[in-house]
Amino acid sequence: MNQLEHLDEIAREAWHGKYDRIGVLSSGERRYVALASGRMREICPEDSIAYAVDTLEPEWLEHMTAIWRNASQPKDSHVPAKR
Image (cartoon, rainbow, N blue to C red; front, side, top):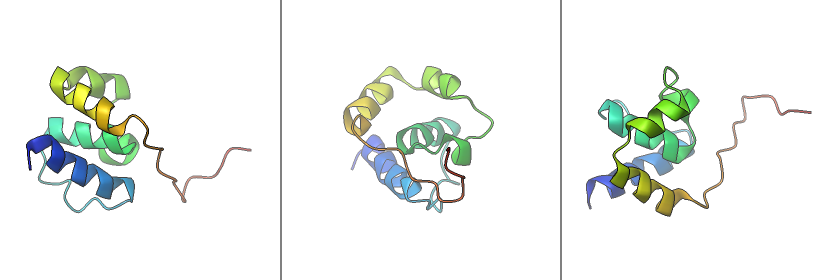
């Protein structure tokens, strides 16, 4: 398994609200996982999405777009729904 596949695996866990494996990641890896999983607020609350995207290696961004393009955003049960 290569590094990005490993990060995709962690991102899938984060999508489900499981953050156990996030703590050992570098800041760039955390941003990748946060963006891919749709969990920026939970994983990288100090970063904006624009900043996170801008700091990713071009190959990582291309991979993330190809793999996660059709993924839905996680359902967040503790955030009130907009009416």
